[in-house]
Length: 140
Ligand SMILES: [Zn+2]
Image (spheres, rainbow, N blue to C red):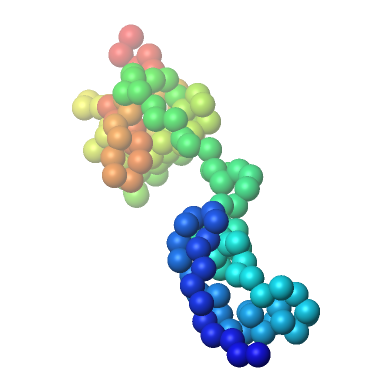
C-alpha cells in the first residue's frame, strides 16, 4: 500500500493542512481506517498557540495610589542636613522623599525625627516627592 501526503481541512479553523504519510502509516500500523484527523495540528494542541496565560494574581504589587497635591500633614522620618534630603512619613504609611530645595522658603532646614510638618506632594519622574515642607505650628 502506498501513501502520499494529502490535503485535509480542519473542522475547527477551516484551514487546509497536510495529512502526512507518516500519520497515514501510523494509522495503518494500528489497523485503523486511514482518514485525516478532523483537526489541523495547531488545533490539536490547544494552548500551544499564543502566550500561556498564568492563572492567578499577576499583580502582586499593589498599585500605589497617587497622592493628591495636598497640603498634607505628616511626620519627618529623618532629615540629614549634610546630605540635604530626608523622608516624610505620609499618614498612609508611604515615605516621601524631600530635598532641601523642597523646604518652604524661610523654614530652617533642620528637622529632627518625628517633627510634624505640612507639605505638598509633587509627582516627579522618580515618584512622589514632598515640597513646601514646613514645620507645623512654626508660624503661630
Ligand atoms: Zn485548525
